[in-house]
Length: 314
Image 1 (cartoon, rainbow, N blue to C red):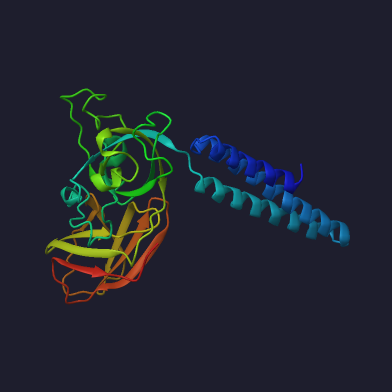
Image 2 (image 1 turned 180 degrees about the vertical axis):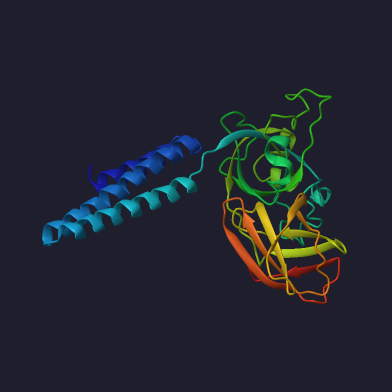
């Protein structure tokens, strides 16, 4: 099959779904992704064969070219599959009122979700997803499952939310009738405005498809220093990329080495060093392993309760 035929199949696959009035499901996206992967492999194989047929190339040079092609294809298709991450099933409800004012604060510790960079597109996660606060700051793309409840879903819509709170279990109610956040159910209790972007208010609860995606933030990472002497509690917010933090280090201007911090709760990380009177730098690692370092975030005159913005972002 040539490139034109492969492209035609990909286009037809998409057009058939739109033409039939059905939403493009995760399985359909994976099918198109596979077709595109085949196109890439076929295209670069053809280019390489043409080069090899027109030039007298030593055996070692051929091996180098082939190795380069294989590496490129592997890296490209890996990124392509990551972009079409597997969708999973869950349910969604809403809370916080029509203006989302009731979603401020929460188990991640962000406080004012507007000033911390998250706005109204937020959700509280059930135990299965919250992971003892490790999911704070992570972003999820959510689609109402119109195949199951077409009368309640707003077709053709999706939303990307940030995990900012915990939805506690209610063991007094059954998991399928009020105890929506009971383990092991994956559940998103979304802000009301966010919920109404994908479903009708009267639905109350809808089945959804979700997948973890990258976070896009405006401005740099923010650090808010609370606590007291020998106990610095640092809230880290407005984090892009994977969004959820796996490790943090701090270094005072009078320190020789980076000091590992520990998660206290939610997005709050603690140090038990005496950091007063020092300018502070922070190193942040996300769940995907990517790391950024923000130097001299706080001047030596910093005080507890202050927040500092940086130009560093993922």
